[in-house]
Figure 1 (cartoon, one colour):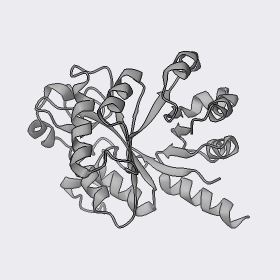
Figure 2 (cartoon, helix red, strand yellow):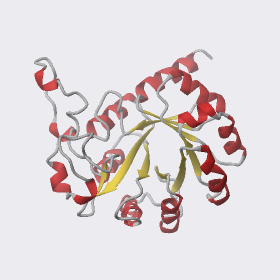
Figure 3 (spheres, helix red, strand yellow):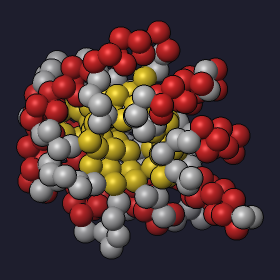
Figure 4 (cartoon, helix red, strand yellow):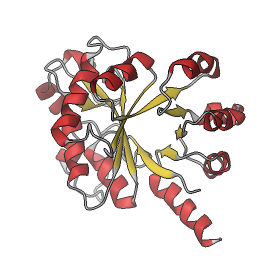
Length: 264
């Protein structure tokens, strides 16, 4: 079975994560899905940013939740990835719009306008000062696109069981993914997650406990794995029957899968 290839924060191995440039590169590479993390700004906008603070991905300090979208829009979210570009006379001219903060609405509009079906896996980050308001705003946006209905291309992921419960109450038809990082949390989660929920273990967990995926699949839950970047990890996921691999390197994963298809 061929797993779905989902671009982790876009094609983030080569491009600055969560920028429009990274997602367009992933789409151009043929990614079947896009993954993003979302946080709420001080003025209520959902933006695609992983970290709580800005130190790693911009040139300034600050916490995402304390800043307005206009303040975030002034920052360069891409320069950290290739800090020497400005000194390279042969580097192509950069489109600043591809390097700025990306709102979830802009990402969903890009997907809606694309010429083929692309799925979106949206992770809500917790803890956050806004608590359940993040999921409330997310579901409101999905309704704007008509994507809170069966067959929606969007699924919502979180390490927070409580956050996923909120989405289930607000939008019962949206597919949910319970993320799992450490094996000891699974016995409790296994008893409480919905029967139709997906399970999203990290690749490190599967490397150490490959039977975990088999147990999850036997219990009736499909498995989506993050973050799969090597041939060995992809092969492990294929052997275990994983339904989706979330990768920083979607083009490479697709190339490997095509090679395996050709060898059959």
